[in-house]
Image (cartoon, rainbow, N blue to C red):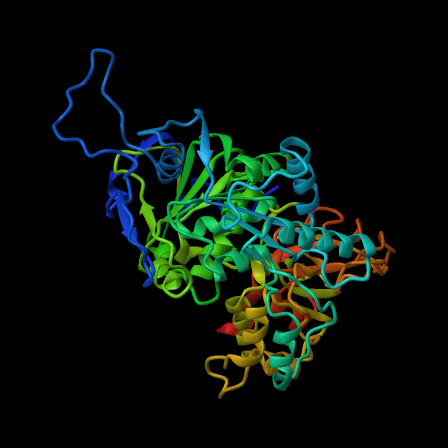
Length: 535
């Protein structure tokens, strides 16, 4: 359903090379790199592959193939095998298992049913439990799920349970920050952003989570993917899982990133190019000068939406940006791996990012790609900035930049939902560059936006009817020909999915966009190319 206005894979800025491409020219880094945080515990790290001592001559049946992709290397280490190939099924040792309030109760129930009512988890320090989805609601069943997570964590003495005790809204005045932190000292917010902020994402490791967007953590050079409750229940008891090794698609993005584009535009371009099924059970590896220039939060956005293309996991090679981000977040030693020069990739896609334009994904699919400027006649009812995809600190700084540049007020209700408590505090405390010291919250208030909400997943996936900013009863609109259309509510959102009913009402229409495009659209009341305000 990609827009015909977008160039195809044969366009000047996209080039696809099919099947089993050796990419020696793209791997300038060593195959392995050992890094730890400052408080490193000394222990021996074993390489995935023992170094070859002498040149091996081809066997009679053909040459010996040892080159592997990043994903294959990570799974080889975790399965204690010298090498792996796509399609192999292997038992993988898990480094981190994450679950949250939606899937946690089911996962715990399966664990107890299969391992015994009095069973203990395989490692209480490798399990992360994060309430985040249905939090600030009066729904009894949603609150019960958090209670179940709390009870299980206490029973199992889970080290990383990020509890929420005060369900009242967070205050907005800086003077009450300390009081709020006392009320909720452990609460974090959206699991995928919190995992990174709390140091659970490390290069070379395997992170599994009961949420499809667990692939976000691939930005750190690790294998991260979502699993179901049954698999998670097994991991709770055994610490391992049977996985099939995915083949890898490589996306090479080069060129200087225009100042009106964000990583959301890049991933919408890719999904529009290969479709929502184009990477089904495949790894998506992102490389190139553009990727290297991205911040960690932007890399997280890139990897977050690989599942919208059907991907098993997304991965970005670790580099100095990764290591610097992790310096004060973990003391656990980790080992980064990189694709070998002659690694085999199922397909390769090339992008000249300097030639891309701001994009949106029109209803009702993430691959329904269109140029933002082509949708300028689409009248909208609201804007939503938040979620694991678009609710990070840099996402709000980007939105504030547009509001600041315009000096105007929003034309439609604009809802802001920080992903985590840390992001929420950043919104109220970090000065926006070029603003003369103003914070995001001050700029949002001046622009007429709604007060930033308590950190959570919010309306990204609908939730109970009292969820903040949820699309509930739609409002009737008129078509350009003044004929009454089907009642809808049109929303430009920085979230990751726009299926019918995703943010609430099944007739809602969601345009996925970057924070730049979302903020620009809020200022006009129509889907708007952010270059209108960022020139």
